[in-house]
Length: 86
Image (tube, rainbow, N blue to C red):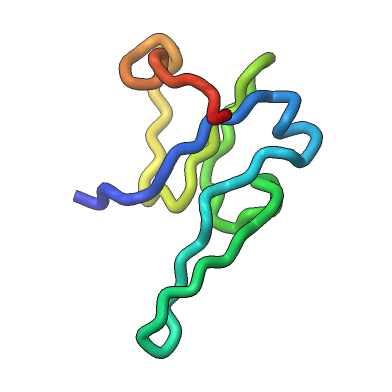
């Protein structure tokens, strides 16, 4: 079903100032899990889609499929119930 990926919700001022921190990157090396931290979501290569509004930024990481409807997706569940990450 290709259901992987992750969404992040950030406050616009943090995103614009480089203070929006993406989720850690996990990588396996010789049977050991290594976590790599990226300090600015704008520099993360996993970003597939960014939706920017006046106050909020929605970021999709590693999403396999993007679909663009004609209606307003921010007015539908679950997107309209999202809140920014602290």
